[in-house]
Picture 1 (cartoon, rainbow, N blue to C red):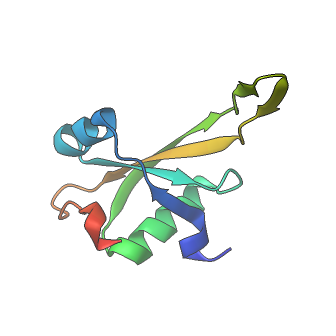
Picture 2: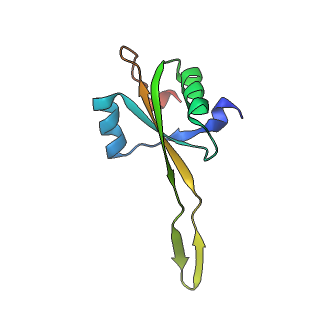
Length: 95
């Protein structure tokens, strides 16, 4: 798995921006089969920062309906990446 395949993109929400400003934590959508070690190595390689910890959360796809047709959205995984003290905060425009 390539380091650019691990991280699918940043999650830019009010909650993630608040965590970024107060807790030095970045939020990414990652591959469902990615491990914490894969995520840590990918963030350190792409952004050239030191990672303190990685927390992950798995989300099950919701049922969605269009008239009589029903289907499920895909399952996905979110990663909270905390940077070490003294590291420069990453701006998402650098991706």
